[in-house]
Image: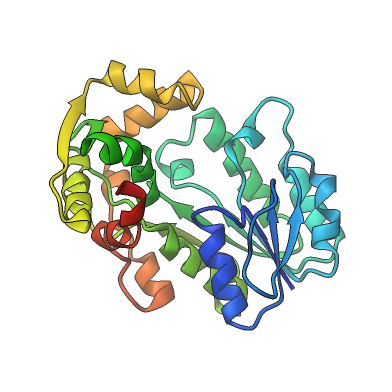
Length: 279
């Protein structure tokens, strides 16, 4: 059996579906009750309380571990999840980390994630670590303004990074869970090319078949909007990356191609599949 945490999100949902379609027994874990594919067991659990995962982990051979941001708050102990998995007899863990542990290793969230990577490596379980950069699904932040006003408002309109389709992350995760060849591997996951917010707006317009205007926000305007849903420190950190990506953050990784035998999907594909969110 394979346990998928974050099973109702942008990565966990397609991963759960792919594993079920591959004939695997799957337990989907999420904080709230949600629909899951036929034949998939669903367990409600909060990863901030690792002991609560025991019912989900009972009998599991593999675990996909996706941590939400609040697990990096003071007092959180995500490493305990690794201990619970080992104690439950889990043989393999695939951890969703972040490219930031390499490109910007000194932020509090990246320090915590790197420590979790190290805990997993020193466990006796098999492991793989996935380090994606920016997600195509972050464009959903613009969904409301596109629906209401046909406008994308974002800072740094002509500065881009090679964002990745979450479905590609899910596909790589499935390969790592099912194929022994990926044991003890670290994969950096990006899209096929650098794309700017202005170009993303154009791709959304093409998916909708109607014009979408791009409005460039100042850094301060963007921070004010972002801090409504995230801590100010994280907003500043995110804006640093979006405004001045490093060479490593601009690099297009070959790892999706290496694992899947195909190129990562472009943003236009993600926009076409998710056009309904912007209508």
